[in-house]
Length: 47
Image (cartoon, rainbow, N blue to C red; front, side):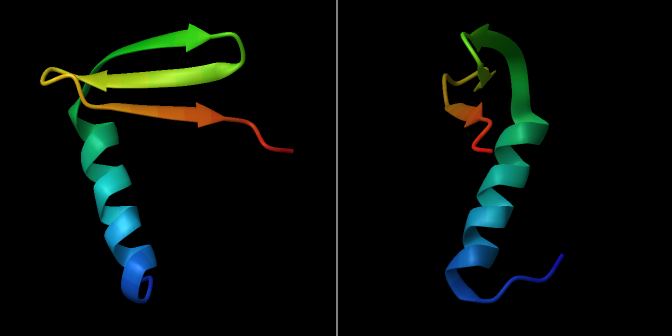
C-alpha cells in the first residue's frame, strides 16, 4: 500500500502494532490490541 505523507506514517505504525500484538481483548464494542511492551491500539466500528 502506498499512502502519501502522514497517511503513510500512520499506515506503517498501524501495521507494526498489529504485527506485534501479543494480546487482544474486547471492551464493549472496542477491540483492544496490546504488544508485549504495553503499546495499545483500540479499534472501534464507526459505521
